[in-house]
Image 1 (cartoon, helix red, strand yellow):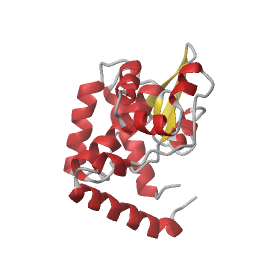
Image 2 (tube, rainbow, N blue to C red):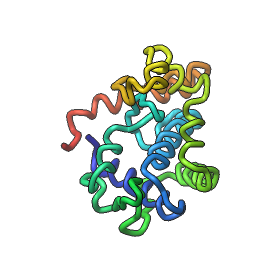
Image 3 (tube, rainbow, N blue to C red):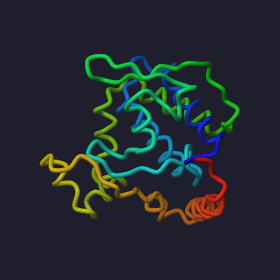
Image 4 (cartoon, helix red, strand yellow):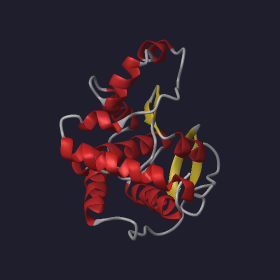
Length: 193
């Protein structure tokens, strides 16, 4: 559940990516959204999109976005459409990108990350998020999920990633992040369904 401007920011982020990445698959999009949040938290102490990510077999996944992209989008219907080609889902924009919800730093991060990953196949991004000592790897390991994923016993979990872990050696950014989470928690009563 998000504020209207959160949905606009996520929707416009997806538009930006779909317009600049040829054949943007659902899997690749989900990895890029995660990387935007992780890199933004590492750089500024604040999430880019403020999504929650769970430990799934193919890496960190925002269940909300995954579900909306698994069929015809509902939450993001005004922003994108999903096309199925050979049992893969590809994201196409429905309107022009609007940068009203983005700071200059966020636009810079979005442009740099897009340029860095646009020609990489989805599996490269999956491998990147799975690397040893990544937040996904450490969380999956702590919750005994790695072997279950490898054996195909499980493909998802409801274990949420805690971004505080990547800020343990940066007290200032950790303080900024915790302040953001506290503010977000106090605003939860005002979220729209």
